[in-house]
Image 1 (tube, rainbow over the protein chains, first blue to last red):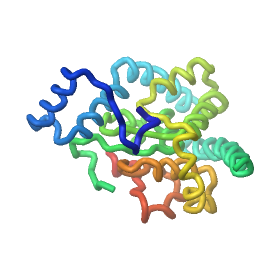
Image 2 (image 1 turned 90 degrees about the vertical axis):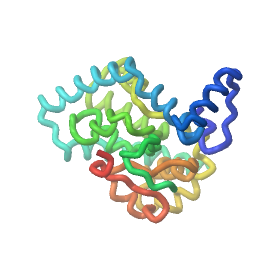
Image 3 (image 1 turned 45 degrees about the vertical axis):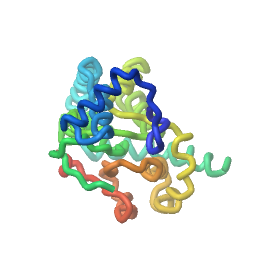
Image 4 (image 1 turned 180 degrees about the vertical axis):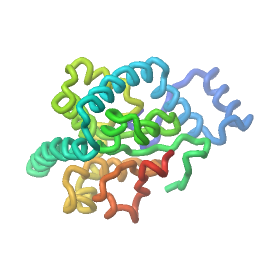
Length: 97
Length: 141
């Protein structure tokens, strides 16, 4: 779905599902089909399983950061260091163009 | 661009930058609340994801497996370079002179018509605020 975002998106859905979509929009449950699709994407992204995994791993990270007393300023420095590498990569892209 | 607020029903589409995403992962602060709020659909580029992967591996010492699992579980859609490359030069003109590493996210903002803005704490994005809404974390709570 991502690679077609911003363009027209063709979804081959069974008639039954299309009818359901029309029904949900016509009944006022969703104001537009776009709204319905946004909700469907959101539901997929925030599935219980995904969120559980993410919470477990971020808790681990947060504990580590707390224990080592890593402050916001340190985090900013870390991001800047990594961004330096991105800049180099972007420079390579510019040269290849 | 449609101006919406977090209270609105339709989930907002926000383009997420590395600084706020990393902060959301390592602190249980405001950024974390926004990321887990389920109010938004986040989109970013493979450049941001690559940066997060490096930060998790090198700076936080996560195993490759854990870093990949964490990235896969993020509630974020990722686009690759191919998706944004047509807007690359325009993005470069807009922000390249401030910070080249912001080009991918601006190219993404130019590539997607129906988004609601960029979520970042990076002050360099100030130069594109005439084109896109730049959200501060507090505005999204």
